[in-house]
Image (cartoon, rainbow, N blue to C red; front, side, top):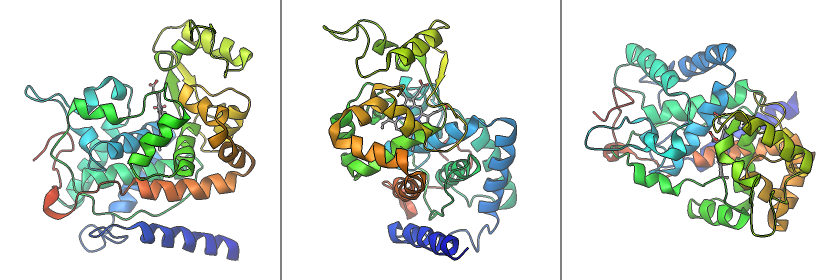
Length: 317
Ligand code: HEM
């Protein structure tokens, strides 16, 4: 019990420590006191009928934060003059937009013009992790919504064929350590990849190998079987696709990582020790994950007049 309380305090304090100016833990206390509860409740209900939504919400937050910061730029619809981020090939399989619309509608009814779409995305990802069985943690709020969403910006999302060094470089550009990159990749404990994201591992891999040599041969057969149903066929990242656990890291140890960017974390000696640590110790995975998520949720956050509170998450005001 005491250990639990201490852990919770540490989690909350670590959140405060990462807080950027203008954001705070009790940001909506006076203006929309039930904002957090409304989002949490909606996530809970939505996951009961569609557990796969947890993965969608978590990935949406990542794709939002890595492009233009956590400013809900991912939610903006394309117009005749502007192709938006969400229409990039890297985002076509994102899910959860309707959920965010729904949560926003409810919040607009309760407290019009107060709660930003960027905060809703961040809270929903946090709550999705919790209801999927992952760590509980608090995040500061007060992110403003951005006014720019351009398809070309999404070239800064990591592609599934990146190796460990490329991932390290890209995450470093966003201020993350090697360990934070590995622990955030542990988000792949939830959800699936489509065949189109990994099929190049299975045929004509390189000049000397037909199949990616970092892939277990039985698992390669599993992936091929999945792909026999077409490019959009879904392959779970681990055996418990809707449970937030450390099975993803165990899969990497068995050479059963789905993407090159997953298996490389075990194949590369610079990151293998970190994978082994999380495979052995789920509590450490949870603890490091929530810290890294708080940090990610603060990437290039827009404050004050640098952004707005969108009335409709799909359109700038
Ligand atoms: C390390 C670099 C990463 C790469 C290269 C990567 C790439 C991918 C790819 C290719 C997919 C499958 C898309 C598809 O085939 O439809 C995917 C799914 C997913 N990614 Fe990542 N990702 C990375 C990091 C992250 C991070 C940091 C998070 C969140 C913190 C995340 C969360 C997810 C989730 C939850 C899914 C499953 C989505 C679903 O089932 O709807 N990923 N990722």
